[in-house]
Amino acid sequence: MIMKQLVLLLICFLVSLSSYPQVDLKKKREKIWNLSSCIGTAFFTAELNHGLSVLKPELIHLPGFTANISATRIFKNRIEPGVSLEFSTFNGYNNNPDFSANGFQYHFRNPVTDPVKYSTQLVVPSFYVRYNFKDVLPPKRRKYYLNYFVEARVGAAFLFTGLEYKYKPEEPPIFVKGKGVQPLPGLNAQYSLGAGLRFDYNPKWGLLLLADINIDNYDSLDAVHNYSASGGRLQLMGAYSRIMVGASYTLNTQKKKSSLYKRFRKSRRKPQKTPWSGGFW
Image 1 (tube, rainbow, N blue to C red):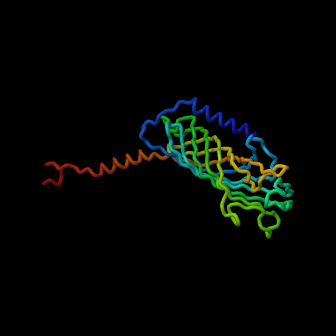
Image 2: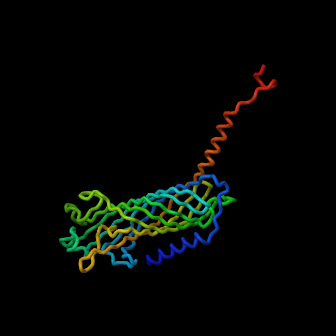
Image 3: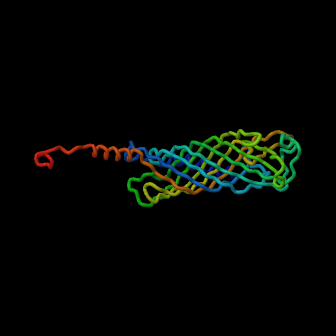
């Protein structure tokens, strides 16, 4: 399922770049920016090997929270390169754990069999490119305007995670990263493909609906490493998906500067005195 989603989104992204004409902005010197913010739900989807085969989950995952802010620059009226900052949380549990790490990983040298829970926070600064299937600024702008887009993103994921006993709060955590005895967060690469809709209800403001799937190049989004039957560490990746809603604001900095400059120049002009103007005599 994950493989099909990734391939489908990648095909849509590549076809859109090659198949749709790009229209220059009416004023080439205008600097058009788009600022947006979204919130929604994050779902831990699966753990994958590098052949994109899905492994059996070792924990039950619950829906988490996600939010992001982003800023993009609009080029050719279709392409939006930009930066974003994501914050996501994941939680889960297992009342009858049977971890592959038991007896192999240092933190599981004594097998963990009592009910456990995990909590993970993810902070991801990233660069991305969004392609709009319609002009962001059409020549004849209607009051209401619906656009749709695809995007690809690459970033660095800072991981804060921990696994602890569910009913033994007095016991120390089984495994932590980014807090407690291991204050440094995990740092790894992340890749993402997404698609969405933008509904502009005036030239400045719009509403967003966005869905994406993310591949994190690390196997500890659920705070547990995975091992083979022979005790070898499996180099896996974590996949999660997000569904978000938000708002966007389009900012034309060049237009504002030009307008302010004209008003300033106009206020600086002094009327010439003539024999028939008041105050000459």
